[in-house]
Image (cartoon, helix red, strand yellow):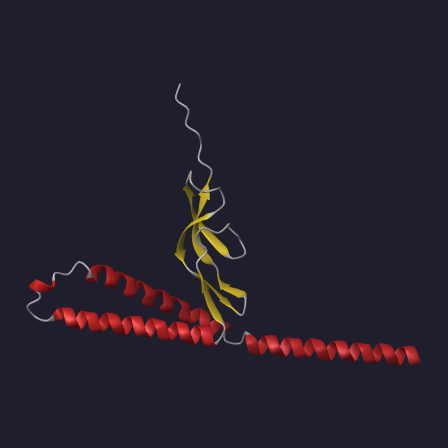
Length: 158
């Protein structure tokens, strides 16, 4: 009888611990679908900022007769501030961004989109990152889209 009581007690302890762990995980990852929906927004903010910065450097301010340059500068600052604020909110809720360029390819963290022949890097390395990956409390919620190096075939001329 004593052994049955001890087993029942141990089983109850296990159930309580498992329930507690599941409740913590549910709370921790409850925002996963919401975050996934916002990742494209974050990508577009980053893309807009980089394209505008690149184009802004090509503008000749001496030919700006209508005063568009200050307005574009203000727009760029607004986009950059919004992108920074979104990154801070992500960080606050445990969302992390990663760029695996020059790391070894890991199919659990990376989605290979194409292969790149590169004699300077070992085969199986991430050569290019097209889309950054994201984690939520160390869980991959979006793998990074990457180009992976492959071994170059030696071309022998006789």
